[in-house]
Image (cartoon, rainbow, N blue to C red; front, side):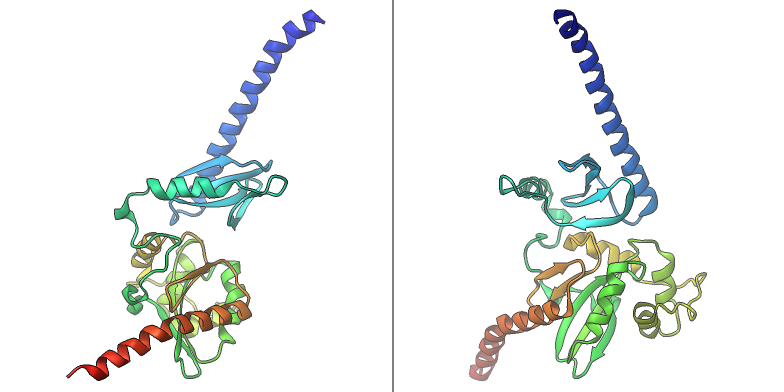
Length: 270
């Protein structure tokens, strides 16, 4: 029994060292794959999560969960331990946010942004109905969740949608859309009908893609689709149309008192 214990010690130590080395190698391999596949996204680190085969992929202060076997899909959100009711990711996000220099971000990732500071000239503008309400989307034509969301946005009534194109999944397709004779028409053809026949994949022109990337980084947008509402709040990832409508209405309601106060002030001004 003693001999086994003596022999097991070194064997176990070697096994642990091997496992740690493999984990480190797997993390490095996944990080290299992500950087090569998505060059427009700044990946800062990869770490094994509590779930076997799933890794925490960090993009500055933001995190996604990715399978090493299929790194095409990113799960944005937090990892929860249901048994202990513990938020595993929350404290890590808090530490990452607190460590981030203030100069790197326009607004805190969890705080409403100032919609008035968005450079709308760099966005595609689509008007539904009267267009009285507004929505601001960061989207990628190569993103499957973006293509799933776009028909939901097309059903909205009386909304103006400003879309900032991002090349998170590669530059060729968004570049082709923006360099087409009618970018809005091409965008709708791609996103609503999967029709790319009118695009020239070799097209070259000046586009706002780089500015949009910088803006996305400033706003903490590291995944598409991301929607900002009129009150500056956001949703990340695919959201059903009914929830988008609810958020639009809530944003409009929250801004109504401010608009009324401004109107009263203007009436009283000499």
